[in-house]
Image 1 (tube, rainbow, N blue to C red):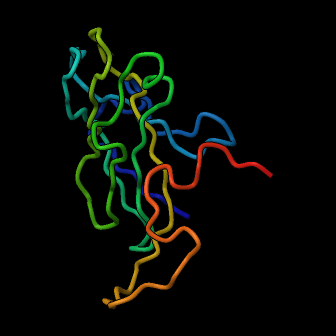
Image 2 (spheres, rainbow, N blue to C red):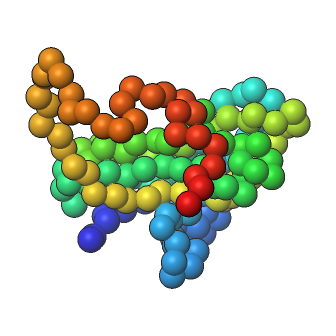
Length: 153
């Protein structure tokens, strides 16, 4: 699958790394902050951080998903306020990463710092059928916690 990436800033490849897979087994490409100055996120702050890139997915059969970096989330409380960012196949603007600080301490995002990861996935477009009844299942309408805490064999 070919992903076309357009650099929107002269910093990409110099002060800011281009998107890359950190290891052969990485599902997501690391995205870095393409900013002129460091950004401090105080507790509760949200900020859209530019990446300096735009992408072209090969068709409407793909989507780009932006996920938080687990190390930033766990160690620093820096995560995405919308859980997952969606890059539609027809979007050609700059990829911005919405970040929020859920910790009790300020955190400063540095120029070129890895801030998120981009995962490319196939899309299955649904054909919607409105109906009066849904097929029965063992779980039925059981909601949160209805399947139990632990599965026992």
